[in-house]
Image (cartoon, rainbow, N blue to C red):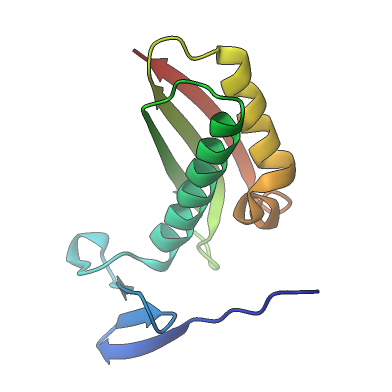
Length: 139
């Protein structure tokens, strides 16, 4: 059975909107120049969703294998097309794992599982966007 969920975006002024699910909200902005932004742009929200999804997947998977992780940081960067629609043509994900004694093979396996079976945002994007991923372990 499918789980339904929804969000709503409401214009505040100009190209600034507040989006949320009724409990939590974020401000977004779609200005002509990124330097004029007063909130995340829609593509930054998309990259944020992907980074959060990957980070959560990695935390869960590495916890299950009892890896001694103290901190996980997931970052996403994208390359935007110049022509319309100006969507991301490429995305790179990087996971930073902090803690001595973490098994690199376990981190690599968790990253592969996140892509193939766990992270729904990655699953939705990977057929239409080139996505690469890497990880680093810092003690």
